[in-house]
Length: 464
Ligand code: TYD
Ligand code: MG
Image (cartoon, rainbow, N blue to C red):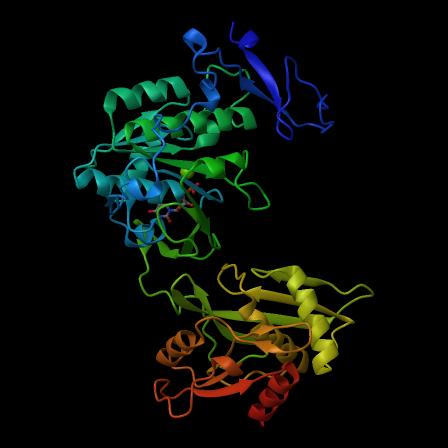
């Protein structure tokens, strides 16, 4: 019955076929055909764009932009300050949020805590669990100290039943944990397949928009850190959040990758405790490891995450390698590391060609901004020479291929945070150095540099 309603559509060119084929007959792409529901045309044949192509909002007349009233969206705080920060102030009516992260990082924990706080605030909530039984969710709630929670729980993986429950319960916020476990009756493919994930997410999104119910979808990530399932999922939803962090340490970061209702690049910081996730409102120093003595190969940098400066320690180990030396980096881009080693050789005369080089950003943070370059280079030279950088030292700045040190955005804020935490020596790009007579930096001595070799010479001078 269900079978003959389905067609296979090419992900690359959109051509359709009644059967699955390994190669698309239209564009020749391999393995691109996925099952989709073939929608019957709407009765009367008036609405040709029915079914999967139906708009997410009801049809509207065409109007000039100036005549459309701009409404500010109403947000409800989730009771988790750090989660609200990444969401842009709270959960928005009818918004669809996708939240991804490694298994065991705390997605279910955080969402259960948030739902409970919303429920206490008087909103109707529904937690749909496809991965765990109701009893397991209850056990977690006890552990979180939410024994008396009134959050409604449904253990179900069939989309049609979930939609029916949503229609009956009319929650203001619903969590689907996780989208990969759902399946729709309309398709024959297994839960978690591209077709199922896409179809289920599209249905839920349409429901959210039509009924004004905020829906949070939990998504799995693949081994290489991407959200599993079709990329189209990221386009469909309003907000995409990622959980980051080292599962061995207790700190977790949530990063907004996309947000139609707020700023991206804002992060939320949490600590995993006995009683669930707790927000860390002043996270600037959590990624510093505590060395009693200064050690070789370690350099601190100030990175900016959204609006907050974070101090992160970069560690490098340079050691005699075999015939093909290795370059490994954790939390930093490996290609960038190769580039920095080349610049170091060419413009500062520091050769690591025959050495293994390992670089690590402490605490499982991922640093993508180029302002980390100078700190990485200083950590590498420090390890190579076996000499620690001075105590209370930090550096930041982007390094170009010509060996120049370029300014980092909002340098003054970075320096202020470092001064507040008691750092005493900083090497920074010239444009980031404060003007003469600026007293805001307390005991922080600031050295401005324009080139990499200048920075290296300066640091050697500081050691003696
Ligand atoms: P969970 O929310 O189940 O992760 P996800 O849904 O992302 O897979 O988190 C489970 C981990 O968190 C588990 O390893 C135990 C830990 N944890 C705590 O440390 N304290 C707590 O209070 C809870 C509920 C979990
Ligand atoms: Mg979970």
